[in-house]
Length: 343
Image: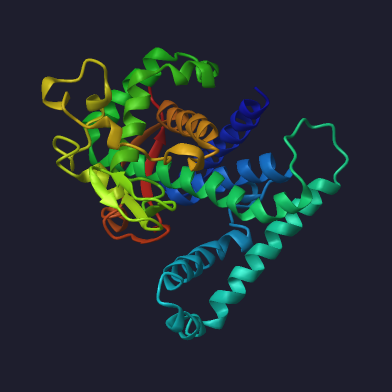
């Protein structure tokens, strides 16, 4: 309940800022930027007791601004470490010094944030780990708790704008099922079947963590997907490919939320829903998935409840199609035209 109050407060600030920005720019806002401000402010407060100030200032904290460089570095290092050992040292030496410095700075900033939080005198009922654990996990808290959720919301809104009939259906359902803005609570939204179906379809077509998820067999041969896999072998599944594979989903490239409904048309009855694992599975699945779902439901519902979405600006019309993947998506501005709802 305490987390929900923080989500509600920050989402209200977010909606107000979108109103201000759209009124000053002929209705155009960079949705990806403002959603990022929202999710980083939320996770900063929940993790370290202090917001990053994005919604208030309209600018990204310098550390967050350089975070994607850090993620690129991580991606390169991860792949380099999979090479034969004689090559690793030479390959690591070729990584630009600036990228390595970004990574060191990111770790240092996260550790400092954790120490500040531990030093605060507060009766706030946080779940506290040891200082060492918090320092080591700080970057994971911020990245996993903000970037992925922001990516998901931006991507789903892009897909909705590319599919106006679905956007219209969602808007009508949210506004009719929740006449008052105060009705948009976590409990109510969790039960909304169409909203959840839209989000699942967004996750299928645009998983916020699209990179491969590695697992390693132990000291014995394993059977994976009906195949014998030798001991100590790395195995992976690409979420982007799995979600778009016609062997798993009918009409895999189309945005059809109805496929997730209990009364889905017969043509979707054979969809392999088990292939849908956007938060991974097992003991290493996403520890923050419940928070992510609560954020995604609330933010998307607040967006379509408060605003009419009029279209994508020309410079953002291939928003997903132009992105590259470095562990996470390398996003561009998502400029969309909005207006306060008119009933």
